[in-house]
Image (cartoon, rainbow, N blue to C red; front, side, top):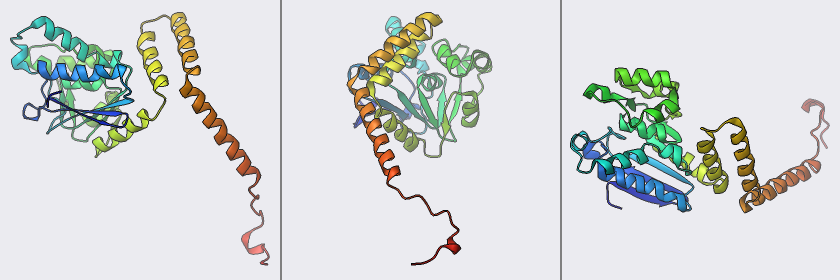
Length: 269
């Protein structure tokens, strides 16, 4: 993988960094391709979580408009964009994003697709395409799923830029932290330590059931739960839980009860 997306694996966490800081990590076709490939490669890997951030002063300033205006291969670009801005609804590897600076237009789309988002107090967001006579077609559905249709429409119509605290209130992000990279990395490690099959089956269920009626969703839930119950990971976790409860109960039985008398009335030996 070239330097447009830096990839570093730490245990079961894959750290992906958008690395086009001189362009505020604007998404040209090369960056989109590398990011899509990196995200999708985890489906058949042992990665437990993805940590996504951006190099330089911005997380992502959106699409590279110089390329969008005259794409060399429109069909290929359209496919890349469709894959990129639907990863949150397709992938079963959790993505934790650490956001600082500008996350505008397509950058807001990446944020909306991430499963958990930690933002710095200085982070800014917005569907700014309308300022250029465009519409946020590519990211609209993901943003609407994150914070609601009516609010997304307002943002698309006005193109206004809003701060991290408002993004938190709207549900676009999950936390505001002064050290978002450290907090996001901590969360990614916590997620990666959980059962892989439970998380993968869980995300598969979330994606599939969103378009099902309740009967089909219930049937899928039963099937998915049975698969998790039958997994070696669940059986091991159940044994560990039972062993922990047994140990706690034994300790409680052999721990003397506290003396109910006030300290001053106790006789010293």
